[in-house]
Length: 155
Image 1 (cartoon, rainbow, N blue to C red):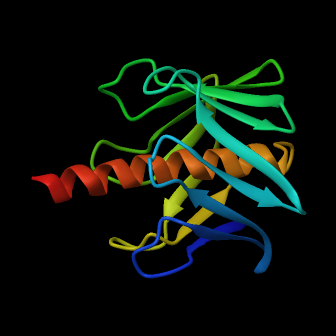
Image 2: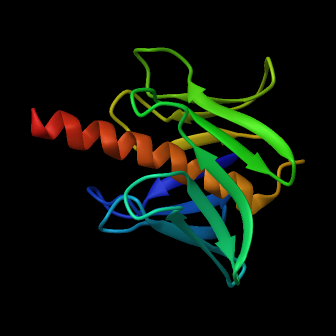
């Protein structure tokens, strides 16, 4: 079981834990469309394909590892491709902040807040998914939470 813990009360940067042991740091850039994480001294960067539109790209040392795109700007879902495998990251329900990872029609993992108002996240993803890809899924979920928080603060 993975856990993502905010580094400070109002921070969108997280410490990533695997079985209670830290394995990486996840960061959300000031401009929310960029970010990245570090795992075992390897830096992974997340950016948009185009400046303010298009999908997200996960890369390390100039090599694209995975991509994620929203089928519609009005939905909270991502279609993700990694090494020829396609996934869908989508909300568990219209009213809850938790997300589920699907491969085809099958739910293969969940990314859930620890509590109603908590930004701490409990992640249950299959071990067959590489750790950088799991961190990318965590980052996408944090991005959706941040967007929801930003829109709630604006209203």
